[in-house]
Length: 117
Image 1 (cartoon, rainbow, N blue to C red):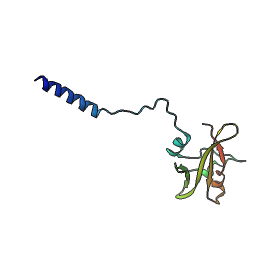
Image 2 (cartoon, rainbow, N blue to C red):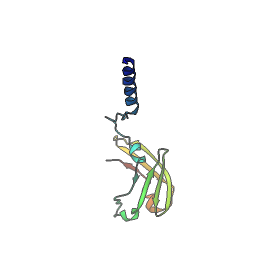
Image 3 (spheres, helix red, strand yellow):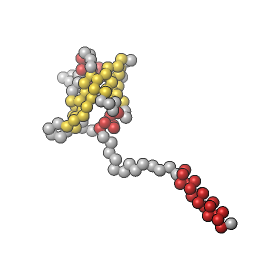
Image 4 (tube, one colour):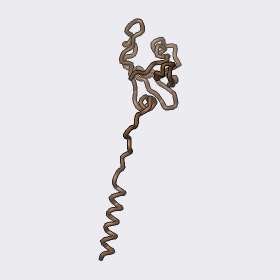
């Protein structure tokens, strides 16, 4: 009888441990710029270059891939290119976009952008 109780207690404990879900320890985890970029689709909320050009980018999305590929999507048209990150002389984080296009509006994005937020 005593062996049955020990066995039953051990069995219940084993089953309990098997079905308890462990959560990863994310305390102190700060996602990298790449993590943030590739997990979301992005839009141009405001663009000013000598004039407000925001309307040129309405309903467009920018998609980043972990392979360094990038896509600009608007009205069923996809324009592809590459992206990379870096740091300037003042230690500001940069993201460089290069789209393969002759479209002057999309070409406006072909720059190194200083990340602020």
